[in-house]
Image: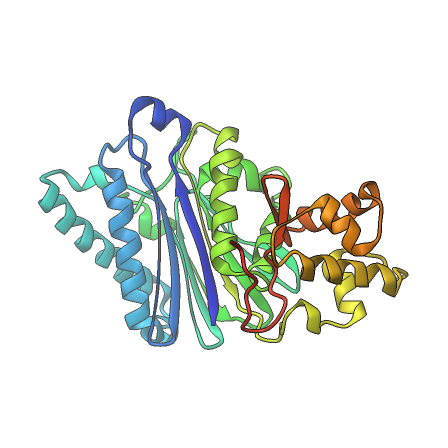
Length: 338
């Protein structure tokens, strides 16, 4: 199975102008198929948030129903045509309900669908599609801009079929996928280097060792407090990451595995590793630094180095003056986060 993490946050300019968040994300799982979709409503279209919601929901429903049909069809043009026609039909229904022109529902669209060992990616307009393979972030699809500067292609554009990117293939060693809008690009994608931020890999890896709900919470906090401040635009992201069924809990790892997870040198002593173990176990209940220092028999200034390391890795959280563990220590036994 795969985990889904997603969020969409209203941009500063939209807050100021009292415009709804025009970015939308959606996900679905059915028939052994999982789909994530993201759409960025056109700023020039006042009802584009309805359009973005419509196309993300349509594509998730369509791909969970017909993944095999689309994957086995070797005529890429035909697949694009069917998807576009389906989206436009859904948008027409929404336009009728809202009594507006379909152009008012314009948005971009990015999606990833997976089933068994196969995937389908599609991309219309700006935004970025990335993936994690062999612990390295890679680009699957970059932004598709329009004919003029600062323009892009939308689901309602005449150029949608011609510019739509469609990618199919075996999952192989792929560990996860990420979709992001152009607002999120500002912080998590370098256009100059054509490179995704390393923090995306960290988010994907963390979702395999702490609860997805906790990763979701941390992602939302990061977007609300950091990502939106780098741009005036709405920001959204959708992540699909393979669950690590081999992870049986931190305490079941051997010394080498713990060193890798903690980012420690191979020469790190067993005594140091045991201190990290003791701290994580002790912090199943809220404890202060002074209490932790007494527990591991170290002065507070040295104890703080251990705490700072675990906090930086998101293995523990701070609650007032106390800390508690959020990493999965045992299989099927999430720690108490109260």
